[in-house]
Each structure stands twice: as structure tokens, then as C-alpha cells.
Amino acid sequence: MRYLQAIRAARDNPQQIEELYRAAPAGDAAAEFRADMLACYQESPQDVLYAAWYWRLQSPAQAQAERHPPHWKLAIPLSLLTGLVLWLLASEKLAFAGSGGMPYAMLLWSPIVAPVALAYLTFTARAGYQRAAQAGAGLIAATAYAMLLAAGHPAYRDLMLLHLPLLAFAGVGAGVVGLGASATDFFAFLARAIEVVVIGGVYLIAVFIFVGISLAMFDALGLSIRARGAQSPFLGAAGLIPVIAVASLYDPRVGPAEQEFGRGLSKMVALLPRLLLPLTLVVLVVYLLVIPFNFMAPFEKREVLVVYNGMLFAVMALLIGATPLRDDDLSPRYRRALRGAIRAVAVLVVLVSLYALSATVYRTVQGGLTINRVTIIGWNIINTALLTLLSSRQFREGEAGWVAALHATFRIGGIAYIAWAGFLLVVMPWVF
Image (cartoon, rainbow, N blue to C red; front, top):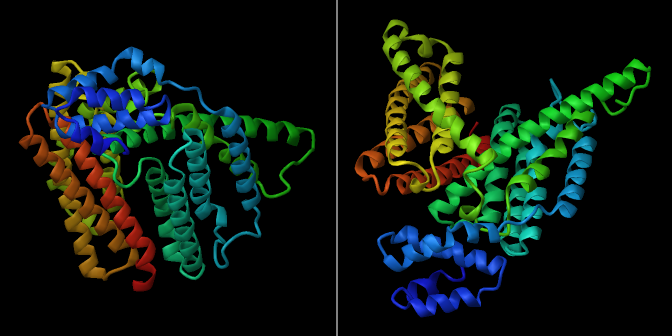
């Protein structure tokens, strides 16, 4: 954000802002200027000068000029390195002691993939080295801490299976966009990350099919290539995917909000959640109507509560996927329908989540606190509070500010998610 203060100071001086823009060389500095100008526009969208610059920087010619091809010469070696490391970790000797013998790789895959992906993004952008180094060091420290305590604490070990990937993702985000990123940049990075997960899943299916067929062909000839365990070829193959998926979709030489959205996979990933919103709304209405006929189910059955909490995360992902980066990307009629569907889904899910929270508290009073119950209660409270905040802001904000309000809510949610995951990492093994 090297230009942010200068742009603000030159708010009434168009010539000075033009000189700042021309002085920014092509590439990283120009991308920083655009990101900072976009942040100023988001702060003061009524400012005519900022608005003029916003539309100038969003022009098709400008967007075309900023597209860069993936840095395959860096991405492919890093992918091979990741696959090799995960393949080596698949050894049966590298596992926790005790019943089940969970392999180290189950805990370490995300802390291994995240720094490699961050290295690709940083070296391709040729900027942000200090920020990336700090994020990487924090992730390494968190992983070492988790591995040390997980050795003698099976419940904590299981908890970290889901929360270390979240913290690893947070480390990549902190290294790429920084802790002080604007709500728009934060949301754009989050939306791009969802696309990376989707395309990574497609790549993973294709690679697993290839590996499975290859193993079957060798087995048919009586040749076994599974010397390090039956799952190691698949784990090594999976390690090839993340950096390739990141390189395919994310251009680190421009800011998150300047990524190419609205076409190809990005358009599909945004369209699917929007199509699912009305179906989700129908399901929620029907479900709320039938709850009174089986009211005690979540109070008596743990599996029902697990489904409820999984639903909360699914709805949050659905709302993020359905939210546009800019409201002018949609027609007025479509925009109103989308906004109404998001508000309705959020309100109904709050009702369901409060019902689930009451059941969780009831079971906790009956059976006492456990590490899993505290975790579920915390996530339930966070998601319920976020959906309540989202709903209230959507009813309070006018049509001009509804997208910015969603972005701001998701940024708050990201901070809350990271804080709670960090608390679970650091504090929970000492409490239970």
C-alpha cells in the first residue's frame, strides 16, 4: 500500500494523481497503485475523481494489459518437490504411536503445501518477501507446536486435522494480501481461493484416475510399484496438484481485486451457488416447518448436530460463492433477486443455527464439557453471529452498499475464523 497515503493526500489534485500513476512502472508498482486506488474508491465511492479512476482502471484494455501467463518454470518444479515430500511422508514408519497409528502426512500435508504455494506466489510477484517470510515462519511454528502436543493427545490430534488446513490457508492469505487488506481485496482473494479448490479437485480426480489405472496395469503384469505402502502413490500424486491449481488461476503480479473474474471457471463457480440459493431457501423453509414434529432429534443424537454444524459452514461457503465482486457486474433485476435470496437464506439459517446451538448447550449441560463440544459451540456462535450481522447489514444498507457490506462481513468472519482456530491450536490441549 505504498500509494495509499499519497492518493488520499492528492484527493483534490488530479494532476498529482496522474503523475503518481505515470511514475509507477509496469508490473508490481502499477498493480499496487491500482489496488490502493480501488481501496480509496471503496472508502469514498461518492468522490468523483476516485470514481473516474475506478472506471478507467476497470476498462477492458487495462485489464487485458495486466494479464500474465502462469510461471510454469517455477510452478512445475515446486509441484514435483511437494509431491516428492508427501510421497516420502507416506511411509508407514512415519506415524503417531498408539491405536490407529495416524500417519504424520494427515496433519502435515497442508503446512507443507501452503509454504510452497506461498513461495510460488511471492517469487512470481517479485514482491512481498518479508511478509511471506513472516507468514511462513508463523505457519512453521504453529505446525511444530501442533505436532509436539498431538503426539500424546489423540482428541487434539483429530481436532487439528480440520484446523491446521484453515491456519495454513490463513498463512497464505497473510503472505499474499497482508493483514491490513481492504474488504474488497480480502473477498477477492477468498473467492479466487474457492476457485482454486474447485479446479484442484478436478485435477485431483483426473490424476487419481491416471494413477489408479497405471497401478492396475502394472499389477496385471505381476509388477508391484507400491513398495512404500498402498496409498503413497496417491498421496504423492495429490502433492502435484496444489501449486499447479494456484498457477492456473491466480496471477500474483496483480492485486486480488484485479484478478480476471467473470469468465471461464470463475463464471461457473459464481453461477452454481447462485442457482443453489433458491433451492437452499426452499429446503430451509420446509425444514423449519417439520422441526416441531421431530424437535428432540438434535438433543438426543450427536450425528444430527454434526450435520447442523456442517450445514453452517456449507451455507457460509454458498453465500461467499454467490456474492459478486462488484454490483455493477449484474443487471438491476438479477441484482435485486440475488440480494433478496442472500438475505432470506441468512435469516432462515440463523433460526436453524440457534436451534442447533440450544441442542449443543443442552447436551453439554447433560454430559459435561469436552474438547469437541467446546469447539462446536465456538464455531456455532461465530457462524450464527456472522449470519446475524450479515442479515442486519443487508436490511440496513441500501442497494448501493449491499455488496460492500457483504465484503466487510466476510472480512470480519475471516478474522474470527482465524482467531478461533488459533485459540483451538494453542489453548485447547492445555484445558482438556
